[in-house]
Image (cartoon, rainbow, N blue to C red; front, side, top):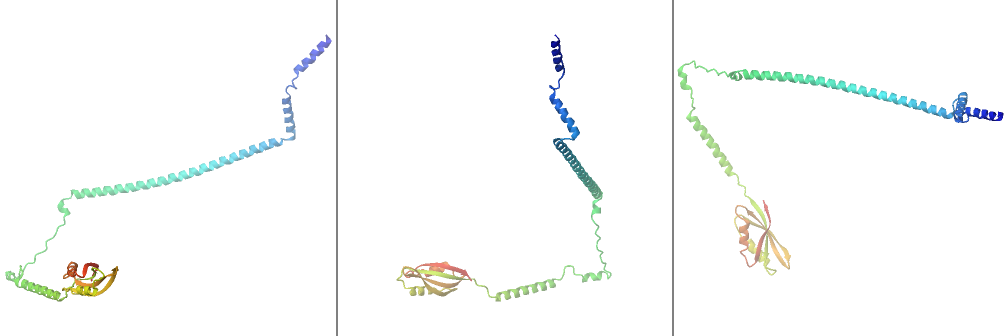
Length: 263
């Protein structure tokens, strides 16, 4: 019995002790005790430094935000002041325009109320000179002019017109002339070109003057006659000239105008 009681008391003591069941807590307490005695560990120092740096950065950010807010407030205040100044200036301009409009309306009203006779300026009649010498001077005044003077002016005018016409008639009139280059073609290569040119130059008209000529090869031994002439436009035309030249049917096949120039 005594042995059993001893064993029971030991079990009861062990049941009341819990140090081995809470060993982790006791180890943590021991570590904290030694850290308090020897100072914080390196990890705690790094954590503390990181916390301090984070607080410093947060403080700087707050300072920057406060400064930016202050700058924005100043800019807003300056803009408000400028808007107020512009508003004041606009009020002044509107006030001046209203005053000018009222003056203009008053002047228009006065002009409308005034009579029409006041708007038209009075024109004073020129004074009429009275003849002091009496009725005898009325005979000397010619109200309608003299017929002799009109005839003299008409005669002088007619003389000037006649003199101008005579002077103009003495000037030689300009005669319009043209230079024509003709291509005269024969029938074949056996045509006598000298006789052909003689026939062409035999055409004579008032206002026609023949010039230089030459033979131009056409092909297959055939040559055409190129001849120049000067004509007066009012007297000689190209149609009449071609008609007169083509009358020589034995030598001439056709006549063409190669060039036509006004002189």
